[in-house]
Length: 410
Ligand SMILES: [Zn+2]
Image (cartoon, rainbow, N blue to C red; front, side):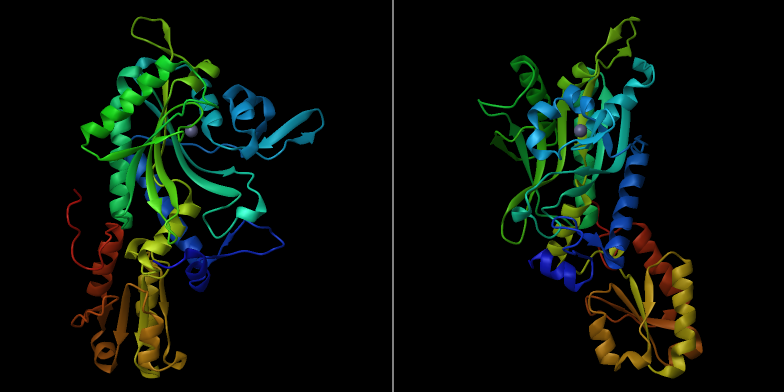
C-alpha cells in the first residue's frame, strides 16, 4: 500500500496550492473523471433503491444548527458564523438538518413512507491546519449522504438494506479490507436523548448486523451525539483507522424538528430518521481507492480506460478512428502516437490503464485491434467494433475485474 498523498499527486488526481489553503485540495482532470464515475455509481444505485435526490445549500442560519443540536454539541468542528446584516450564516457541518426540513416541507402519510432523501453535497469541517493533509484530512468534504424517514417498524429493514448497499458498493469498487464497528456512546459527555431511546436504537442496529451474520467490534464513545451507528472502518497506509461508510438510527432530530406523518389511525406520529452513507466523503474514498489499488483501478472508474497505441506513424489514422469510436461509446480513451516514444516505452507509460489497443499494419489493414490487458495478458486480434463492445460491456457492468465476467458477490 502506497501513501495516497504521494501517489495521488504522481497520478495527477489532486493537488493543493498554499493560496487556496491547507485541507482544500483541488481535483485534476484524472481525479475529476474518477470522481464523476463514482458519483454516477452512487446516483444510479440510490435511484434503483428508491431514493429521491435533492440539492440543498451549503449555508444556513445559525438557528438551524441550534435546533439540530450541532451548535451546542458540535460547535468545535464548525466554522464561525458570518454576519450578514442582522443574520448569522454558517457553513454546514452536515446535511441532516436540511433534509429534515425537506421532509417537513410537505405533509406526509404512512402510505408514502419510507421517504428516502439523498444528496451528494458539500459539508465543512473546521480542522486546524496542523492536522491537514492529502484527501483524508480536509476542510471541505463532498459527502454521499441520505436520510430515510420511516415508521419505527420499518427501521430494521432500512438498516439492513443500507448495509447490503454498502457491501455491494465495496465489492464493486474492489474494497475488500473493511470491517464493521457498532459505535456506542461512552458514559460521559455530549449525548442527547433518553437512555431508553439509545437502547432501542442500539438493539435495532445489533439486530441488523446479526441478521446479515456480519462480525463486528464495538466502539465505546464513537457514537454521534444524536444516536448510535454502524461504521464501516478502513485503515490507511500508516494503519490509521477511519470510517468510510455509516448507518445511524436517530430518534432525536425528528423530535427537535417536530417531524410527523399521518398514520393509518389518522393521528400524527413521529418518524424515525436513519442516516446512511454508502461511500462517505468522496475525498476519503478516493484516497483509500488509490492506496488499495496502487493506482491500478477497476476499469469502470479508471481515469483512462483505454489507450490506443499505433505501432508506427502509418497506423495513426486508423488509431484516431478507434479512439473517436471509443469516445463516442462513452469510454475515457487516449491515443499515444508513435512520436511519443518506442512501442515498449508507450506500453510502460500505460501500465495503469486497464486496456491498451495495439494497432500494427495487419490490424490497421483488417480494421482490428489487439487488446492488451493491464495484467499483461495479450488477446488475439478482433474487429475494432468487437473489442470496443467487450470493453464497454465490462465498464457498463461496473465489474471490478479486468476481463472475466464478474463473480457473484457473496
Ligand atoms: Zn445525517
